[in-house]
Length: 200
Image (cartoon, rainbow, N blue to C red):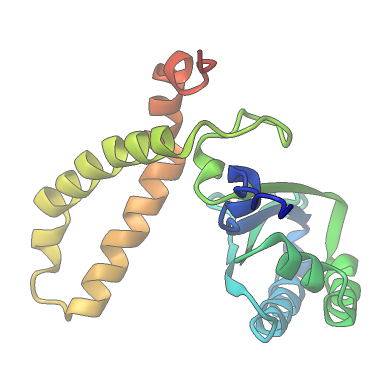
């Protein structure tokens, strides 16, 4: 007798999720130029790997004492865990790490998230599961809609004479910055009981 075909479970049919690695490194002011050059080399090398979605070096917003290390953030994004692992285990990454490490102070801090989970992860945690995707999408829209509306009413008129691409670039950068450091942290704190409520 033929064995009935099994229906794939949601776990086996789920689509792969993009993965973002957020890295924090401290750099002495005297080594900034060398560090940034090495990081740009690493970012350029990562672009040639399958599944690479993007990368960026985020410079410190404030510069303090000349002897105080500066906090840099580096972002790498890949479309799947497997492609991220291929990059992390590659000889190219190892080579560029050798160029970067002499210009840093202390150990790096690494945080890995999937999709938009960065906005919804618990502070200082790398293990907490993200809320359901539909809740993530809902809260993301609740944050992006008023943010974009505010920027179109305040910033966009000041850029009316700019070309379209630079205008869109400025607006989207501001949206990301406001969502990451202002809007999303407050929304996720206010809506925390709902976001992380256990399903019945």
